[in-house]
Length: 245
Image (cartoon, rainbow, N blue to C red; front, side, top):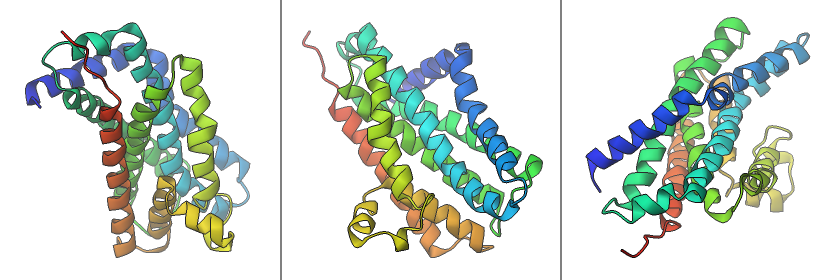
């Protein structure tokens, strides 16, 4: 790997995002807009908004980063950009980590905006610090990016990339505990949920809602989220094929 090449990749991806206003809107504004909608839905039940809204601070970034990253990487594959880069001495990990770092930086900005809107504008309440919420939300967004980078390898068109949404994202939302408590699910579903990354994000944010200081369970869940992201990023690297010179 080369730090210089990785940083050049980061700069190239950030430049592309900066000039794509629609992508910027999806990444930076849509999560906040959806949270505002949720606040108005539960205008008479702030307790429900506090519980669901806090979990969605992790789920919305995951979903938006998954969609944007999978489509962006697919464009690189279809346009031949990746193939041309891989025909040079550039290591595939330089490309994947470059993409990962670039989207991680965007994820931090996204998490800060969504958390600030939730706490300062919408009145979201939690026992834990909003700063810790930002850390969890950013980590979950990075997880979404890693998932998108991996799944893009199995699509041939942007439409196919979007088709992974119901297959990869929706089951995680159903099993993470947002819609129904995991402990009230069947033993089979509880067992399956252990392999669902969003489950750990929801659990970590639940700890922030309940306790004023970070708990050991929250730190464990955060480490698991990061581990999932690294493994998925490595899986994405394995899908890249270097073209013979």
